[in-house]
Amino acid sequence: MKNIAPLAITMGDASGIGPEIVVKTLAAGDERAVVFGSHAVMSDAARRLDRSLTVRRIDRPQDAWFERGSIEVIEATRLTELPPVGVANAAAGQASFDTVVAAIAAAKAGAVSGIVTAPINKEAMGMAGIGYPGHTEILGHYGGAKRVAMMLANDEIRTVLVTIHTSLRNAIEQADFDAQMSAVRLAHEGGKALGIAAPRVAVAGLNPHAGEGGLFGDEEIHIIRPAIEAARAEGIDASGPWPGDTVYMQARQGRFDVVVAQYHDQGLIPVKYLGLEKGVNITLGLPFVRTSPDHGTAFDIAGQGIADHASLQTALAYAHRLVAAATGINEPESIV
Image 1: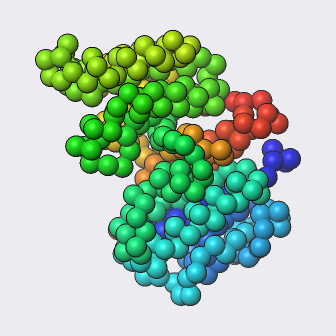
Image 2: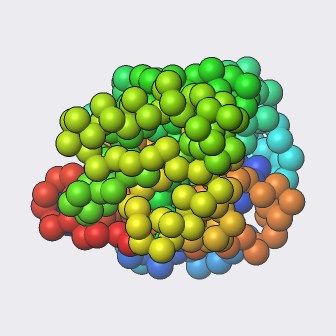
């Protein structure tokens, strides 16, 4: 990986656990990653956890030394003072947004090989007047992607969402033929990026029992099944629609490689139930790699030094492997 640009890690919401888990992840000095955030915030987090750590401010990713005991930060915020810990506030919301936008610009310029994002808080961004509902939408807009999708993955299952951050009522309306095709294609591409040569994509139904032949709804008949057939005509190993309450069980048993979920909770509940420390969020459809831990800002424990950084470590490992597969510098390693 020495010939590949370093990864960018955004610090997340400065009032949450983001800075803490970033420090814990980078403290060993074994990762080729630089922090996009606030030098003051990261220095404060480092002092709280380990006074022997040095937080070094750099101007460009290529200026990083990656020395053990040193964390290198690119100033990407307009913070003038440390925001309060453990509460949503506009200053932290604006700063978290600014760090993501700066990291995206660096990724598009090739200065970093990919982005790993620490958690942000939607309420805090709203307080700052930022209208994006989450990371995925910010990445899609500033990353220049025509369409993006979330893949949530852990050691046992992987899922891609047809619709993301919207109400259930809107999700039903948005889960049209084009949305189905996009999600299935991205699930196929995402599986291949993870080292699966011919991903088996299972598409979950929208209604109970996948509509029960139209008895509980006909979206499966008129929208989802035609999309599956069209995807199969493109050479994608897609099947379904499968009942949403059993398809993940079958995926855990090894029948499917990726499950396409119709809406947010249908896909995220199974992944998160298996443990937040194991899950990682991968954004598909971007011109660069992006991963993140599968949890939020945890304001209730922020600043206490007890946050678990395992999910961020997992996200970083996924990012390294995806970059290696995308660049071809190293042989892609299957992540299972």
